[in-house]
Length: 505
Ligand SMILES: [Zn+2]
Image (cartoon, rainbow, N blue to C red; front, top):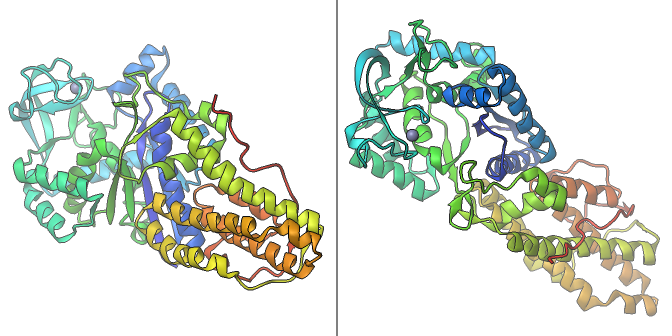
């Protein structure tokens, strides 16, 4: 059994979650469930990022105490994860006491090492972004390159972390580990950035008169910790850094950090250097997924084009949403969120191909064999090609986070089963009283459906469990069960159709 430690970013709780947040967590949930059915010991971390002026401001605007505000908004994330069947193992909040302690330990250790120093900063500052900018980073005079707002000219003392000292180490690390950042386009982006710009040291403190809601800077009471520096440390604080050595050594390094491509630099430049300076290994893989766009725009609160995942789940169901997001685009590319594409996808794949296959087969089992099948049969020739393809490609697709391709393989097999029904014409077998042929035919479909539900379980877990229930199987869904013929009997308990067709009009 090997360990698998996977993380989502921690979400900034200045607003409620949208489909973009849901997407990241569904990706992590899918890979976690896959690793679990494979027999790995999974630790799946998600959580919330709760410090910084933006949150203080959002709390002020809502007329709430800031802690009460983060408690309330954080709950909305938890509620959504519950609705989406996100099987996380731990939910970290950056206001957790153990996390605060870990952040302070990190700063003390780096300060003692000489990697943190105090100096006067001259330059520009964007308050909403809480970011410092140098002349070379600013494209348009006086304007924040990130948010386009007006910059403030600033001269103040702050603490800096020596990113520049480790620039060559990072370049070298990237060269030796071409799979560290995925997909390739993001690896090249980071490499290109490091080749064209010299890394400047990172300002990691904020004077408390400007940023009041943050972790106390442990070596100077006048400062709070920069929110990004605080947030990144969650990945180690959650697994026991500086507190539980044994647990930490078992779980670190993380196997995959899933992130949105907009926070690539924080994760692929700042974070590995922070870890290296602490004498820790970098995560094994940083995987940046794309964005769901509405037309040409990224979904965002400020653009007001957010799709509320709870409303969607109410309309189409949780598994249909999960399926669409994982099937429609490869993880790593951008997708266009379109209602008509969504409904078409659900109707054709889930209602027609999968839903009908299950419903028809269970119906036949009840009608022709009274819902009880007690003899196994070898795999029909008609299944072999698609089944082999699935067996061969599923694991490699899943291990490479190629979820969409894995689903394609599964649906090829579903297609082969549907074709088998059409070609065999079971109603004629029934008419001609060929009961033995009918038994073998129905067994093959039920066994195929059972195996498919194991393969589908990381993607649409509720549906997979429902299929198992309807087949009368009590065993756990796991990859040991994909062997043909291990079912000795089925006792059908048919429920309502899995995915009713949605009226597109
Ligand atoms: Zn800005």
